[in-house]
Length: 323
Length: 257
Image (tube, rainbow over all chains, first blue to last red):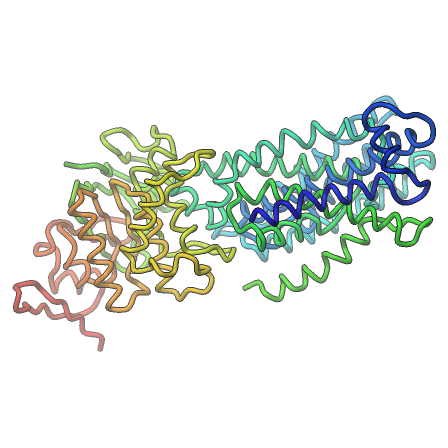
C-alpha cells in the first residue's frame, strides 16, 4: 500500500517537472525553481507562470474531478460502468456551456461554468429518472439512458454551433473538444470553487458510498440516509463534471478507468479510494496532456484522443466481464 | 418486554397495501416467525419493521418511540435486517462486507476500533466463514453469500434481528449452524423476527408465530396454536401430516403430491 502511494505521488511530481520543463522553449530546472519561488523574469517566467503551470494545474484539477466523480457514481449507483462521460453528465454540461457561451453577453461569460453545472445536474436527474425501473435503478437501463442523454446533448450542441455567430464559434467549439490548451491563471482560480467543496462532500460520504455499492435498501438498513446522500453525491458529481467541461471541454473515460485501476491497487474502501482516485486522475490527465503536447510536436493532439485510446479498450474489457 | 412493535402497520408500493393493519411485538430474547405463502407481504413487513419502507398508516415503535423519530443511523444500531440478497457490485473481500455491519456505530469518519474488529471476527465465526475473510464475495456460492449477509447483520450486534428467509440457500449443515447462531443471539437477549418458508426450521426456533395472507394477519400465537393441518390447507393450499418426534417436538410433513 505504502509503495503504491509513493509511486502515485512520485508520478505526479515527475509529470509536473516534465510539463514545466519540456516541450517548446526549454526551461532549465534552476530557472523553473527560481520562477516558482517568486524570482526570475523574462521568457522563462512567462512560459512557466502564464502557459505551463496553469495548463498543468488545469489538467490535474480536471483529472481529479472526473476520477473522484466517477468513483463516487460507481458506488452510489452500484454500477461499475457509471461515470460522468458515459452517463451523459459531461454531455449535458457541454450542451448548456455551448449555449451559454453563444447567447450570453461578454460581461456574463463567467456564468458559463455555472450553466455547465446546471446542464450536468439536469442530465444527472434525467438519467436517474429514466434508469429507475419498478425494482430500482438497473445498471443496463442506466447506460442506455446515458446513451439517450448523450445523443440529445450532441444534437443540442450541433444546433447551437450551427446558429452561433462566427466570433463566438471557436470558444463554443472548444467546449466540445477536450483540451487544456486554453488554460490561464484566471481559469484555474475560477475552477477551484467548482472543485473543492464537491470533493469535500464526496470524501464526507465515503463510508456511505461503500454501503450504497451493496444496493440502496441494504445501505438504508445500515443507517444511510439514502435520499440525502444521493442528492449530495449527484450535486457534487454535477458540479465536478460541469466545472471540468466548462474549463477543459469533454474528456471521456478518465472517470471510468481511473477508479477501476485504483480499486485494483487500493481495494474498495471508498475512504481510502476516493483521495487516491483524485490523485490518480490528476496524474492520468496531466500525463495524457503532456503526451498530447509532445507526441506530434509542434502539432497538438486533443487530450481526449489520448484518454479515449486508454479508455475504450478498458471499457470493452469491463463490458465483457459485467454480469 | 417488547423492543420493537407494530401497531396497525399498513404499507405498500402502489395503491393496494402489501401489509395492512399488522400488530406484533418483538420481545427481548424471543423469536417470532412470520409465515405465509409467496406474495403475502412477509418481506414488506420486515422492511416496515426496519424502517426503510414508510408506513401509510399505523406506527412502528422502537423502545416505545415511533421509529420515524429515530435518526436513521441510531435505529440501524438497534435493528438489523438481513435481506434475501444484496448487490455485490465489486469484488470486495468477505471481511470488508461483514465490517460494513459496524457502520451504524462509526458514522462517516470514525475509524474501526479493536471492539469493532472483534465483533466482525465473532460474526464471521458464527457463520463459519472465518477462514474466508480475505476471499472476494464474488467468488462465493449463493449459500456462502447468504451467510456473509447474515454475518454483516450479526456484526452490528443489534437488539433486534430481522431475518428474511435466511436459510433459503443453505444446506442442512449450515441450516443447523444458522439455527445455532440465532439461538445464541436469543440467549443474549436479542429479539428475532424471522420470515420462513421452512415450517420445521420455524417451529424449531420460534416462540411465537404469525401467519400473513394477502398482507393481513390470519393467525398468531404459539407454534402449537398456529401450526395445524387446517392452517396448511387455508394458507398454503396443501395437505400435510404432523408427526411427534421422540424428543416431543413436532415435525411437519407437507404432502407434495
